[in-house]
Length: 149
Image (tube, rainbow, N blue to C red; front, side, top):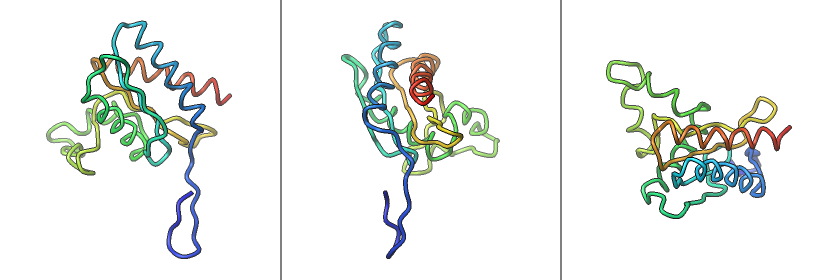
């Protein structure tokens, strides 16, 4: 819940810490299967941290990158890989990654978590090649979908 002005309250969609941990566990299992340590972040619908896990030997830089992928998915209501094309030089969103104090990520690994057509959280994964980050994050999305059905 977030307060806006005097007497106005707006509810923030979110998922529970327990659900976030289950999503992270599923993603971590996939990262172990592909033998690539990752940092996995789950955030609420506004991109604020719910839980984050850094696997042993995962890159330190991936702590911020995974969190920013989750933030980006929440901020723009879309998977981060969908930003790659429109943010190329000469395209309409060129320079997007320089906004929001550099928190916008324009490559894959961040996804919205949807319930009943609404974003209730996001996942961000970092630590491997973009395709690996996306693969691990998609396992987390699948786990969330399973828990939500």
